[in-house]
Image (cartoon, rainbow, N blue to C red):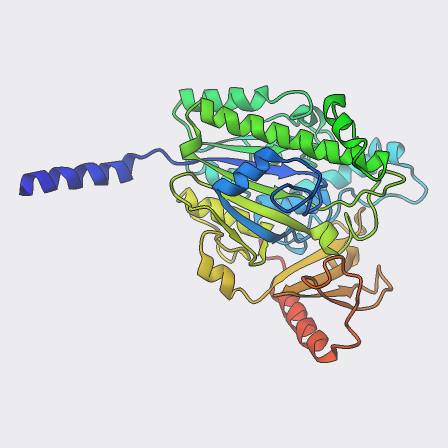
Length: 430
């Protein structure tokens, strides 16, 4: 009997010691409103594959990104740090007066500024680099603002230097084969993998397949909104293709799938551009996103309304992969429910689209914000914004239309003190 117990103990220990590290698939949608999913209650948009992911994993309905602009948000996801820490606060370097877009993007000033942005990012350990130290291969696809994929620590990638992501932007819209090939190579070589899937979807240009668009033409209030809704379903299709590929290849059980949006979006019904209180704003239409984590057999499905942050993604992945995390990360492990509930607040900041200063955050700042339970305070930065202090009860007023700052001066003062303490206490210390 003792010999049998010893044998069972040996094999159980052996499984723990020699089980393959989990793979990671990080899915990042681009310019999508937090409510534009079936599982979030949208009455028209169909997202069956993301609905499935929600049912099979841990779904945080009240996720937030710290910044409502693409490049800073992506930099925060990959570093686990706030924009004023990693200093990627905008999309583009400072623009000389009078210089137009195309001229600026081809100028020496633009490319010199981009190099400083790369240096800002490289001052911090990134998720691919940290995983790489534990033997992971990593693949960049889709949106990547900071030039060559190696700048982010990826071992492989599609982007070679373009502003948004050059050939990397073909992923999802044209093909998923680079991801399939990367997974196959990693499996052949017995290497755990990390995939960054950040397609230009549902981001404009809103050019969905006609077969999808036809379903929404008669249901949407305008042609522009119909196109955007169809883009959301198209993006969902690509997510389904990836999830089905994991199933077919026997990879689903040992692959952690994480989902987040880089920033929100509300379609202007006339122009098709983003409406106020969405992208580039401090409102939930620009900052809020569902965040999902699926780890089959290890993480029980559950839906939570506890506020969380995209800064939680990096420590969550590192903990699951048993990789040592950097000290003083502001994010939490999304699997640790008690820590999430105990967190006092969620913070963030919004900056100018083009940098004012590449080496300091404050000159670029437009707003700081703090979310404590259901209350959200927005403080404008006087160097760039002249508006009033704003306070909203976001559950009672999800569109943030009733500013309660004047009616709640004590709450405003308390939240502002907490916001100031956070800002001062998280100064950059690479």
